[in-house]
Image 1 (cartoon, one colour):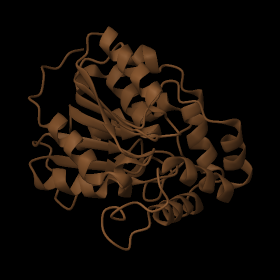
Image 2 (cartoon, helix red, strand yellow):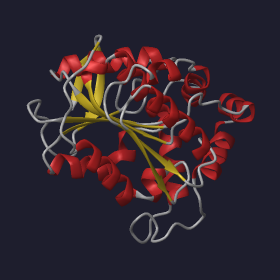
Image 3 (cartoon, one colour):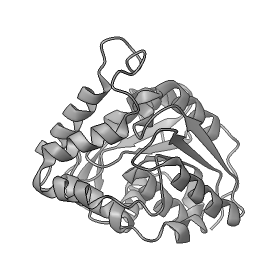
Length: 278
């Protein structure tokens, strides 16, 4: 589905079903140098089980026109405008990595518009190593190799994520190569720098007013579980209902544990929707 936002076309994958705004809506937000396809198994299941789905390509990423947005705060304003454009007042927001920061910023800035919040592979702050930032700017192939190494908990996932013949590292490599090749120059660096410079996470966590689920990979080297637990403490101090789901995976949680990720997301989104709070 193509949605016009601020005069620019944006793409939303609807899980193989027509989008119906009267159904509860789930928004899926991808990470750096990725696109909507990282959510395909989860998005299709939600679309077939009572939800409307918007798995987005963020601006400048494959099917969504550019330019790419340079800050998490600007992305959150863009997301609010996209929901306005499709007539959705309130949604369950799910984000991975960079998308988790976007989800956090959105839920904190627009608590009345967020029914549930799921953050996967998240940390606040989400500092990016200087080595990776430099590689993303000057040696993108090296940057992709670094992320692949740090994102996956094993070289040979069983049963090959989740069907025979699927190579998670190669699949992720080709996706990132395609997103970068079709985007503006230095897109990977733009995304990573948006994560690196985001400084409002704890402030936004204190402003969230909906149930929160943090999903983390036990072997995640990009956003280690200890940082996710620190974020959980921030939500707890704000008297928000929060729980943490630990899965046997690296940073690429949805790829390495697609079924367990789906279970964690669907059980959250299926909870009764709490009253909207500003």
